[in-house]
Length: 165
Image (cartoon, rainbow, N blue to C red; front, side, top):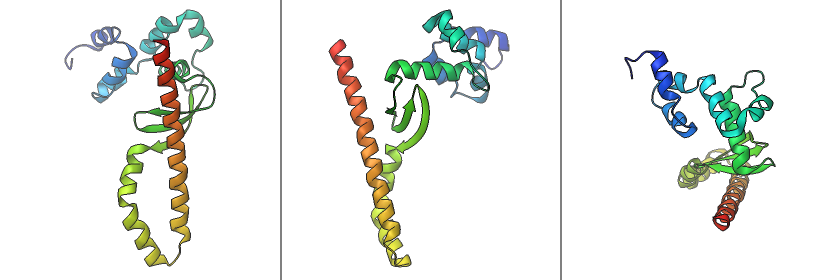
C-alpha cells in the first residue's frame, strides 16, 4: 500500500468496519491519518445509526466524526448514565458516552503493588513521616474500590447479555 495513490488507499479503507479502522490506525502514521478521515467515520456513523441520527449528532467545534462515533458506540454499549467502565485494563468514569475522567489501570496498579513494600518502608525511613505512606495507602484503597465497582459493572453487563442470548 506504500506505493498506491491516496485515492485508492481511501477506497480500500472504505470497505473496513470501525474495528478494523481502529486497528489500521495503529499500523503507521500514514495509515493513522487515512483511517482518521472524517468522511470514512461519517459514512460508518450513517450506516450504523442512519442519516437522521447523523444530522442530530453531527460534530460540533473541534470534534470529528470519529469522536462522535466513539461516543455513540459507548452509549449503546454502556448506556447514558454515570458509569465506571473498563476498556482493556483501563478504567474510566463515563457520562452520556463521554469519558469524563481516566480512573487508572489495573496493570499499573499491579506493578505498583509489587514495588510498594520497598518504597513505603524506605520513604518512612528517609522522611520520618507516616503521613505520605498513609496517604498512598488510602489512595490505593480507593483505587481498589473503583476497580471493584468497575469489575462489578462489567460482570453485571455480561450477565445481562448472557440472559438475553
